[in-house]
Image (cartoon, rainbow, N blue to C red):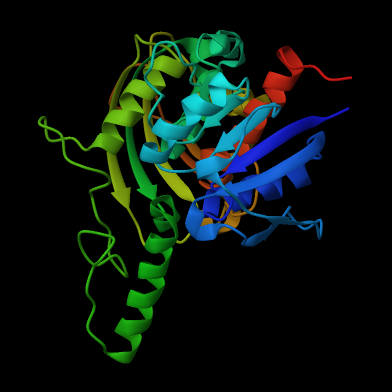
Length: 341
């Protein structure tokens, strides 16, 4: 006996990835609904590579009663209207937007990091999925924090254009083609040219000079992992289609060597350690696309601080940063609370 699951935003990059991962992981489904905005009503999407085609239903009048879970992959405005409606109908919402992440009554979950926090979902019948850059980082930090207690993190991100949706991917492709043939390049989605360039600006600027993306990494890491950890982030958009990378400097309360960290990470859930100190002995974003793992490379001791490490972290942002984490939350919810059969 399986679950009735609605995927909301089924025609977008993340929604399609959610459908693919539900099929790949053999999620126990009795029924799955593809739900999208009125613009996509009637559009057909495939349930992974199963050959099963789903006709999109209109979110505006979709009845969530009788559905076990809804995986939301739409913007905050649509979520603000329809997530409470689904939750009130008894359908547990797993939300990929930023709307509920810092709500004290909504658990913010990365299953490898804080699975027990899901027990608080009943307060609103909503569970939040973290920001893509936060999700992969806390997977890498959790086992090290357990071993030596992290006190401070400084992270610089190298975030792919798929984090800005289909428009971001289209803009990188179109600008790259235009530059090769000598045409002019006009930014539309991004604030500056993204092709053959990097942009140190993701989301809006805040009064303190940081961007909202950087703020998200700070507050979400504290909520998921430990409120005592100090976090400083610089988030950068780079001309990569899929896959976020991060350079992470970590300070610990207790001594930990690079060798100890490698041994810990090698056995940690959700992590693949690829760390050979030779040409090519590390993972780049191109190599992580389509994979479930959060890859860690270049683990080394930081000689500028006591008890410091530096590492390189790469993950498919459409998967672990969004769709995969949402499906893992659904699996966790099923195991702990919505057991069937």
